[in-house]
Amino acid sequence: DGGITQSPKYLFRKEGQNVTLSCEQNLNHDAMYWYRQDPGQGLRLIYYSQIVNDFQKGDIAEGYSVSREKKESFPLTVTSAQKNPTAFYLCASSMDGGFDGYGYTFGSGTRLTVV
Amino acid sequence: GNSVTQMEGPVTLSEEAFLTINCTYTATGYPSLFWYVQYPGEGLQLLLKATKADDKGSNKGFEATYRKETTSFHLEKGSVQVSDSAVYFCALSGWGFQKLVFGTGTRLLVSP
Image (cartoon, rainbow over all chains, first blue to last red; front, side):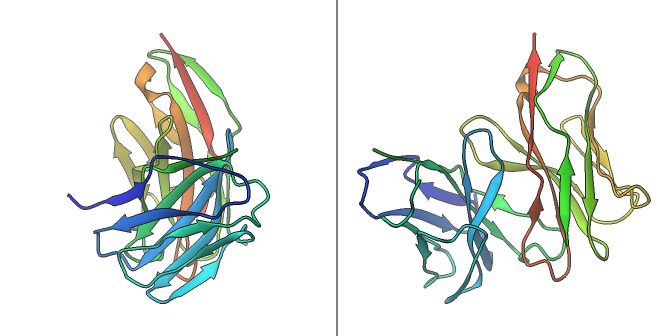
């Protein structure tokens, strides 16, 4: 079955370390997205990519970086510059970039805890 | 700009009660409208959608009707179950948006 795989589900890191969250999809979707969710909060867009080798900053890109070298993969790096990185991170993909009613498919999320 | 406004939660109901979660939107053109559900510790799942005015989306006993005249897409269910306890997100998309616009989410708590 097609879907989005985020790994790992739980991740612990020491303060000051960079960490990379994996997101892979086999849906042949062009567009991919990263969101951050804090307890009891909504979704905040970090980065998105409409096509391979291109990506745009979302609302809270500071302290994060991404790459899109393959259509299937959109890894997110949380750098030491991110002041409060502990959160639940969600990856999503879309056939049409949200243009025409197909919506997004979400992964199951990675819970990052920085100690 | 384009935006979605949802009622604040939590919404607390007893099992078998009627559910309404309000969602209104502001958008140019003719957006598509979505409801997503997030169970504890999981990602979001598409619950239902409607792509044009007067369309009704439905799934798992949930319904929502796209009302252009009131710019609304309220989520309803006739008889909720404990297993419906989750956070519900309203969202919209449309030509030129590049990405979905989400509401802030409404937490539903259903007690036995």
